[in-house]
Image 1 (cartoon, rainbow, N blue to C red):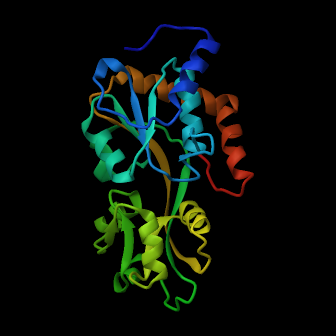
Image 2: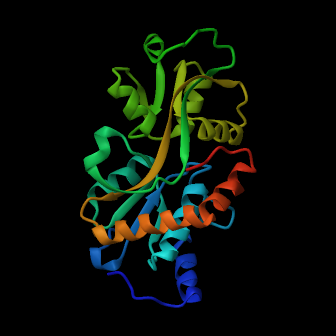
Length: 256
């Protein structure tokens, strides 16, 4: 149920409380409200030092929900679980998700939120040449289960060594268990830095894509329309640009 209009302070308090990372999120009935889930995916969504969910996509959605007078429950999970939840649980959404043709009818879509550049990373000592995507077919490629780059590469006929954790992909790349790793440019750079890994490099840009929030198809069409309208007004009044600029000033590419 969408609540009626309340004061801005009251709505802000509700949203701030909702953005605190829960220790456990049980399946919720549709009447309990909207649940949005994500994974640790800086700079788009991540848990900050205060235990709150931050990131360019998370901040854009927080403002959109506030303007739509909705207070979601928000939680971080491993990506495969978060994606599955939005596919199966009522009134549940996952972000950030790339809107691919194979996914179009699986979800109701809110966005776009931010942009992402999919790349293939290799070790710094990689001497191969990848000038087109088909050139990658001769190499072993690591990827994340149900992640956009992995889904796309599989649709193009490439074989991937998939895992549920991108930390494992970094380790496999460094240890030579895979020769390439398919992921987002910013995510790959940030994760490698966090893990103390410097000897990797992007060797091929797969494509540039836009991120959305993907909701279970049974969600109210009115809720989806409210959130998309809120994002439209945020782009029109400059709020979206200001949120994105906060992350771009940190040399993190993220634009709608």
